[in-house]
Image 1 (cartoon, rainbow, N blue to C red):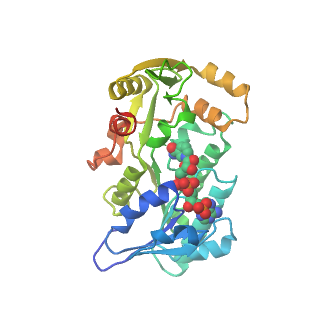
Image 2: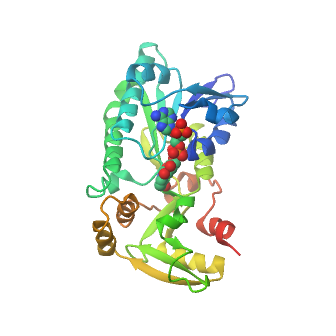
Image 3: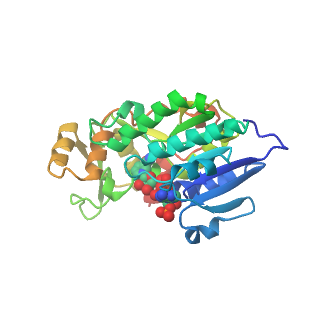
Length: 316
Ligand SMILES: NC(=O)c1ccc[n+]([C@@H]2O[C@H](COP(=O)([O-])OP(=O)(O)OC[C@H]3O[C@@H](n4cnc5c(N)ncnc54)[C@H](OP(=O)(O)O)[C@@H]3O)[C@@H](O)[C@H]2O)c1
């Protein structure tokens, strides 16, 4: 798909939470592009309507035939409906997209381009995290469904792996950068914890940067049809993270290693704790990649790295 002057492009952006709201300005500024924000509570999002952005009442938990008919009216469908979906909901959406592609084929229209909610880690590698994360396992099933059925269904797809969101790395509850640790002596120190070991690394990207790179993918600046592409605001080892935090805050950094046995033991005491499950999975493989392999590197798109983000949010 190329963005030619006399062709208009209709994008359905489903959801306008953390990601959807961050994507909107980047997508809305593309030439000849009309955005429909599909949301279930219009009154909450009226402030997002604009010159080329309209709101549509849409609940993706609704009946599949009606949703497929709606999706078929758009050239591109981008899912930003959040991570904590009910079991089966991302598969339901993928199947509805495939049906929408088939409807477009009957109407002799070009392929429907789908960006599923896979704005995270490399699910092909993490799998379901040894059974801890059924949702991650379902992400792999969605990938395999698209790999096997998209072509014959008149659908093309792009999965954008982003790592964790930059803000998430610094959340107190995540426990990796702990500014309120009990071990903090008069707040003169800060604790950085490594998941697995100090050489293990994590990829993180700011949501605004994901939107920036997504817009370049949508205009076709990079080969992305029917494949997984990667973005990275930064990829850092936990050792590098500790050094960055020390440099930025000027505080002493207490280092604590949360090894895989430690994380598993901690989870065993509290087996339903989602954050503890996440930590075990993030101590495994598939959660980081080389920045040189990313779309932002390939297209020389400036993005916020961990040090810049930390300076803004933790700096003195
Ligand atoms: N990749 C990562 O690093 C990572 C790590 C940890 C967590 N996360 C999660 O990722 C989330 C951010 O992603 P996000 O922006 O996609 O999610 P989000 O901020 O939770 O926003 C979800 C959006 O989808 C809408 N929505 C939810 N269910 C819907 C339905 N059935 N039909 C139509 N719209 C629906 C919501 O509308 P309403 O306002 O009506 O609810 C909201 O606008 C965060 O919640 C975070 O927990 C990501």
